[in-house]
Each structure stands twice: as structure tokens, then as C-alpha cells.
Length: 426
Image (cartoon, rainbow, N blue to C red; front, top):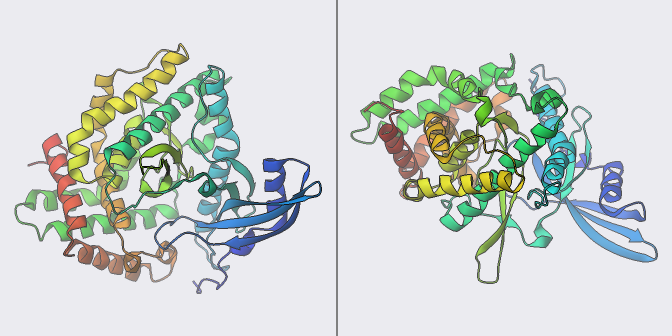
């Protein structure tokens, strides 16, 4: 495989795409004057795509105005690459474009029919889904005061409460939406909501190698901690079954069937604050991994990617109740039966804790990365991917040895909870 092209792909924000976005946002009376692409994210903020800002000047009547948008664009890939990563990335953009431009509207329509406020997503305006030229233009939430939470800090209770309430509203809206579909099945209406990428015949070996490498790195970190031999043994015994564990978790009973956000962690959540610095509103972004699944998947993914152990453990039951009250409250307002009780949710959460553990091993190093730790994920597709995976393990082990102890503590807290819950044998 040759080296990646030097272009950063920001040229994919084309005049035609900006014009389509301006029309969708401002209407036919707005005419484009000029635009420029202006970066605002930092290294480590994004992995699956490039996220950048688009500053636009436009005219309405005799008046010239300014606005801005956020663009998500595909990473550059070598033109001669034979691996089907380009196809997988394309499918991801198709999914996210469909979620923003179609499914989000259906979810909000289901809520509005019962006088319930819209979900807190950025608006989606336009997309280009030509292979290798994929791009989506979205509402820019920065002028409204929304910003990212520091991913290296563990989520606190006030921030977590807003997120859990919104996840509950999303899941409940999906129940209402699915019931209103002619075929009563969101996966038949949108087959892209079926989790298939993990079983892709080309991507599967690379994903399996990546997950096993992360598990091995976790075992290497824990091997340096006294009295965690059982955890090290469990990781080594489990690593080859990691993908099968995830596939099993994706299977869902009809009682627990909701539309998952799929990638709910610090970087994909924005907050707006009042004058005292208190979080007062949340926005969920990045809809590229939405799937039909158990609510416990979103909850475990969120809890084990974005929290320090004490906050998660001390508040777990209240967090689950916060989520459940929001979920059941929306359905009650719509006079729709609630499919499961709080106790059943708690039991389902415990059943799916292994999902949180596996993803925690992958995500905790990403969440706690310093700029020098951030991996170029495109390198794992290169012909030297074995070198990439070995170097990545070395980075994670070094992170576990840092004097701040952040990653070691996150892992220790997670594994202690897994042992207590019986996921990992004592």
C-alpha cells in the first residue's frame, strides 16, 4: 500500500455542498457569496473522520450576512488501496447522513405528535455520498454556547444527569417511532441500523487484531499491579473471543429493542452552561454508529468510557433511575406502555456489563490520551499494521505507568466492579 496522499480532504467541502446546505438552512432567498474552511478541533478529538468548520457569507435581499457550519469529511485513503476500508467508511457516512437527514426527523415527528420537545441533536443540512468524497454539513452549535467536556476529566453528576435524560428521551422516541412505522420494524425500514461492520469479511481480521491488541495491552498494565492475577488471566483467556462477545451483546430481545446512539462518550456530547458554569443543556452528536439494540449497551458504553470509578459506582442506581424516569416519562406522556420495569433495566444492565468492560479497554486509553499518545487510526490499514499494533500496545503500557495514575485507576476501578458483578472470576 502506498503512502496516503498529502491532501487533508478539506477540499471536499465544495461550493455545491455549501449551497445545498445554505438552501436547507436559510431557504431559497439566501445566495452564497463566499465560504472558507476553518479548523477548530484538536488532535485526539476525532478518529473516524475529519471534523472542521465552514464559515459562510451569504446574501438575503440587499443584506450580506455570515453564518457557520460543521463539516464531517472522510479521511484521505490511498487510491491504490485494495482493502475495502473505503467501502466501510462510505457505509458509515451513508448511515450518519441517513440518521441526521431522515431518521432524526422521524424521531422528532413521533415526539411532536404528543407535544414533546425535539431531541437534542444538531440539525443536518446536506451531504455528499460519492465514494472517497463523502461529506456531511451540520449545524454549528458553537455560536449557541455548546462546547465539549474535558474528556480526560471523569464525567460528574450534573453533566451525567443531562446525558442520561437525553439518552432516555432518544430511546423512548425510537419506541414511538418504530410503533408508527408501517412495518413496525426500524431495521426493515433502515437496514443500515443492523450492526454489520464488525462482521465485514475484510475489516473483521483488522478489528479482531485491534481488539486483541488492546486486551493484551490491558493485561500488560494490570500485570504490574499486585493481586490482580485473576484479571490478567481473564483478559488473556477472553481476548480471542472479544468479537464474539460483542456480537452476542448486539442481539436484543424485543422488550429491550431501542435505537442506540452507539458511540456515547465524552467527545460526542456537547454542553451549554449558564453564567455560573452549571451545565443546563446537552447535545448528542456523531450518529455514525446508531443501531437497534439494548439500552444497556448505550449505558455501559457511556459509564465505562467517560467516568472515574467512584462517581460511577456511588451513583449507579441513581443514574439508572434518572435514565429510566426520562425513558418511561416520555412514553407515559405519549400514553404508550413502558416495555420494561426499572428492576428489569437494572438486571439487563448487569447482563451487559461485559460490553462496557470490552469497550472500556479500547476507549479508556483514547479518552485519557495526551496529544503525543493519539494514534493515527488510518495506519492500522497500512501494510505495516503489525508494527502499528505493537507500537500502540507500547503507548498504552506507558500511559499505565504515568505518575498521574489516571489510566491505571480507571482500569482498576472498572475491573474491581467486573469482579464484584461476577463478570470476571475472583
